Image 1: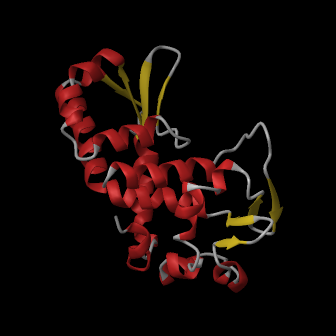
Image 2: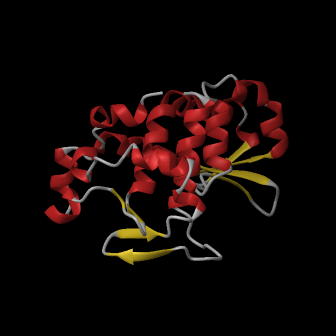
Length: 209
């Protein structure tokens, strides 16, 4: 994955999933957020990326077996996920999470390597990583990360993964009050499992670099 492609998708993901805007630049229309076209998140490079989704509906994006397992209405599934109009740009409420899963799809090799490395550290040096009983959340001291920094950096696309997990709205990786890095391994694995719900063949144009 190129830096340009990652930046386009990750920045748009953050804009669309921002929960607390100081200035609310949108209104709601059913399951759409409709933004003022002058809002930074839907103009310029953001708009160009959004337009790549312009001809898609959720029926194109999700696989049939996943659609059948949900209580989606036909109208919900068949609405285009983007409406670019003169006075507003409307974005389907699910598109932010769709983009997150596109990023997971593109980065999945490195993400699996990341989880594997955490498990190796846990097995070889259990004192360096703490987990809850279900091994949902891993905690490690900053010096532990520093000790293994070279191995982390050898992971495919690690700079993108580190940014996605620790520098975006995803909150998969945070630092707590004790200066420990918390990694929500359970949520990461759940996101990887959800990739099977998506019809990535229909997203080839979106994923093309």
